Every structure is written in structure tokens, then in C-alpha cells.
Amino acid sequence: MLPRTIQVGELAKAFDRSVVDVMQALVNLGLMVTINQTVDFDTAALVAGELGIEVMLEEQPTVAEAEAEEATPAVREALWTDDDPSRLRERAPVVTVLGHVDHGKTSLLDAVRQTNITARESGGITQHIGAYQVEHKGRKVTWIDTPGHQAFTAMRARGAAVTDVAVLVVAADDGVQPQTVEAISHIRAADVPMVVALNKIDRAEADPDRVKAQLAEQGVTIEEYGGDVPLVPVSAKTKQGLDDLLDVVLLVADVRELKADPDRAAVGNVIEAHIERGRGPVATVLIRTGTLARGDLVVAGTAYGRVRAMIDDRGKTINKAEPSRPVEILGLPDVPEAGDVVRAVPDEKTAKAAVEEEQRRRAEGVAGERPATLDEMFAQAKEGKAKELKIVLKADVQGSLEAIRGSLAKLPQEEVGLNVIHAAVGDITESDITLAAASNAVIIGFNNKLDAPAKRVADQMQVDVRLYKVIYELLDEVQKALVGMLEPVMVEQVLGHAEVRQTFTSGKTTIAGCMVVDGLVRRGAQARLLRGGAPVYDGRIGTLKRFKDDAREVAAGLECGLTLEGHNDVATGDVVEAYAVQAKARG
Ligand code: GDP
Image 1: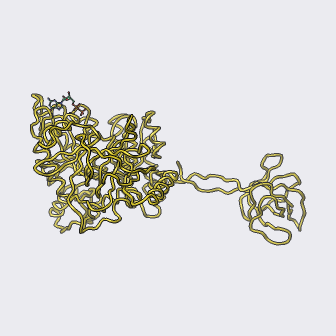
Image 2 (image 1 turned 60 degrees about the vertical axis):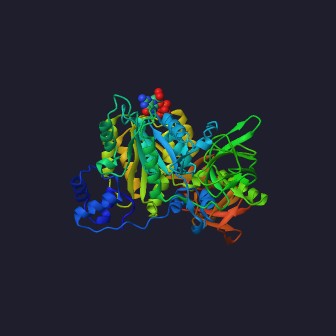
Image 3 (image 1 turned 30 degrees about the horizontal axis):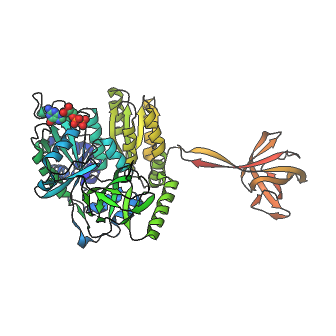
């Protein structure tokens, strides 16, 4: 049994063969991959064939289950609790466009929109509401109007994995560029199927073969080269290839069997929101499941209100919005945030409870939901929970990046696998942080720094960023993470203070008659003896008594008698400071 995609290292394990055997089989198939790269089931099956092993595709979770897995608990609950399988209907795929700057993302979005408006709508005025829907051969496709991986991953980090198909725009005359590489990592981390739109094919300088080879270098193997990524040559300028692109997007969507229940209460995500004079808060919502109707009571993030009006991407007022339909809604008391869940509720009581629940969840912080730091990963590795340590790796120069990548791949990965989800040269940027946040990855920087906006976002999203200047230290810490043994920081916590008021002797032992002045003292607790404020002893509290009885703890305001283990030099006026030392995850 194999999953839909698997890392080469894992594949070797699954086959009980050496990595070398598997790599050799891949080479025989004409594929050059590294141990950390992921291959799809079809490729794995071919490798199995080479090795004379039989394999089967593991039972796949439904799309709903997979999305629920990705979503935060709140989204999960809202989205999928009462979907009745018998009522599920096909829904339009939601597409996001990504790629390097100036490769034509915006132009492509505009061209797709212009060429696919239905006759009925052609009189309408184009409204940029954050997403739009087009019709192609009688089927609908929803396009998110904000291109780029920052927006894509920021939504995902907030639990709103709305994209079904990612269109990677690569200019045929410019080829794979840094942001193309970034976009590929972001798409992969989201585990969303990819379609390459080879744009600007009209230009004389267009060199499709060069781009295809560059994509292969990034591990994106297009169908023509035996891979599973469709590539469609297009021109946003001449509109050439746009029909093919839509055909392919729908084909890819069909494989995912995208479904939703139009007959239930609506659940959607905020795509964008702002306040408008005369209209109040305006939010564009993409309906995920159910149908939203005018007049519905909705909870959006930490506010609720009645949908006063709904306007579609043509500026038309509508009364109902079905799954995958983007609509602007009016009537919310507040401006929600992009990614917030919007859901219809039956009454105010439910609305109030949902808002309170959401406020509580936010107050507790997002961190509770994710094991985002290296230390939490260590802890999970120890408990055998974490199977994979995801890393976003940034280094100063290509040379060190390759060296670190190579060394990381050689680290033993028996207990926990290592997955470098993105590796690139340069400082750590905001987009790296959102990628890490959305993917539960840690960020490792070598000889570089966090830029100021990235630092702010890292603090906000509580992403673990580790900067190194020495490769050895970097490898050492990651290795420790992999075996779950990074030493935690020992943090001291003072339990309380007791003033020595009198001393007694019993045999050779000095008993200190004390008054607990703050906190508490505990039998067996670590303790210091302070004389004139300076420690003269550091050990443990031996016996502890209240009057004649043994006591476990004595709290402030009470008298007690205590002894210090192995120490009899105690005098009136000394202070006993009881403390505890706790192992705390390093932050
Ligand atoms: P974005 O930064 O990826 O959104 O790129 P834009 O859509 O803003 O396009 C960048 C530039 O490329 C603009 O000057 C466009 O007119 C031009 N452009 C976009 N698509 C094409 C195309 O298919 N052919 C040609 N010749 N130019 C294009």
C-alpha cells in the first residue's frame, strides 16, 4: 500500500530496499531525484515494477476529509460536520494563479475573465471583488483575483485552504525565476495539484524547451516528459491557449471530485474585506459548501450580522450564492479578516455562542493548534508522534545552501524524516514565514537575517526561526531534533521564602523555626539559604513540620520547622528560598 505521493527515502523503506536501489530504478526510468524529493504513486509503481514488487494505492481520504485535515479545528467543525454524502453535488473548482513578478499573472486573470463571460452577463460591469467566476463549456470555474503565493499561503496559514488547482505562470521568454521556485514550494507544501501556464508564448524570444528543462530541474516534471504536471502554452496578450488552459483546469479538478452540499447552511471563507463609505463593512466571501441567502444570519470571525445584500463579481445583486461562488456581502457590523470563516447560523443565540467561542480561541492564541517550534517537534519526536520535521531553508549563497542541503539529507532519519519544503538563497522574508506557518515548518537561516516585516510576522504567527553562522551547529541541532533529544532549557521558579525566626538543635541537626513570608515551602524542594541576601547554601529542604506534624507544604503566613539537607549552619535572620527547576522547551 502506497500513498498518493511519497518521498524517495520513504519509498525505499516501504519497499524494504536500499535508497540506492530505488534511486537506481528511478535513474533507469530517466528520473534524477534526491532522497528528499517526492514522487507520485504512478512513478512509485514504475519503480516497483523495476524492482519486481507489487504495489497498491492506499485508500485515499475523500477531498472533504483531506481538507478537514488541513483546516483548523474551528473550520473543520464548521465545514464538515453535517455534510450528508447523499446530498453532495459537483462544485466549481477554485483556482489560484502564482508565479514570478511580471510573468503575466494579472494579465492572464484579466484575459480569462474577458474571454469567458457569458452572453447574459456581458452587459455587466467587471467588479474586482477578490474572486470571479467564468463559464467554460457549460461548467463554472472560480478564479481568485489576488495572484501570488503570499496571499495563497497567508490564507492557508489561517486555515482557509480554498484553492483546488494552482496555475503556475511562467513567462516563456524569461523562464524559471526565484519567485517561480518559491511558488513551486508553496504549491507543493499545500499539496494542491499544479498546472503550468507557459505564458507570453507570442513573444519571439519564447523558448518553451528551455523552460520545460528548468522546471524539471525544480522537480516539476511535465506530462510531456513523463510526469504528472500539465503544461499549457498560453498568451494573455493574444488570448491564445486560454480555452486549453480552462479545459486542463477542469480535467485536473475532475480527478479531485470536488463536491459540496448546496442544501445545507452556508460555510465560506472571507477572501478580502474592507470598509466602504455608505455601505459599511464589505466582505467578499467564497462559499465552500451550502447556499448563502440574503437575510441569513452569519458569523464572520468574531462578529455576526444579517446579510443585508449580496453582490456578485458583475456588480449584480443576487439573492442566493451556491458553493464555490464568490460574493460580496453587506450587513456585517465589523470588517472580518481574510481567511475568516463565515457561516450561516439559525439564530442569535447560536451566533453569540459561536462568536464567544471564536474570541476565546483567539485569546488562547494560534500556537495551541500547531507544533510550530523545533522544541515542540523534539517533544513530539520523543513521544513518537511527529513523523516529519519540515524545514524552510534560507542561506546567504547558493554554495552554502547546497552544502547544508546535502548534509541534512545525510542525517539519520529513522525516527523522524526531514522534509525541506523550500530552499532558497537570501534573507528570510514574510513569504517564508507564512509558508512555514501554513505548513508547520521551522525556518532555518544560515548567514542571513530576518527582514523587519518578516520578524513582525514571525512573532505574530509564532514561527520558530533559527539563525546559524556555523554549519556544524545547524546540523547538530537539526540532528538532535530528529532523534528528539535537544536539551531543554532549565528554568527556575521561586516557590516562596521563609524567614528563620529561631533555631533549635536536635542531636547534630539544626532545626530552623521559620515564618513563611511569601509563596510556600515544600518538603524535598530545592532551597537556598540566604544570609544578608547572599546564598550561603544550595540544596534541599529535608524535613518540614507544622508544630509536631510532618507537613508536605506550608503556605505564606504560617510558621514551620524545617531542616536543610546536609547543612546545619542556620541562624536567625537567614532566609530560606524554596525553588523548583523546570525543563522548558527552548524558544
Ligand atoms: P504579473 O506581475 O505576473 O501580474 O504580470 P502582469 O500581468 O502585470 O504582466 C507583466 C507584463 O507582461 C505586462 O507588461 C504585460 O502586458 C506583459 N504580458 C503579460 N502577458 C503577456 C503575454 O502573453 N504576451 C506578451 N507579449 N506580454 C505579456
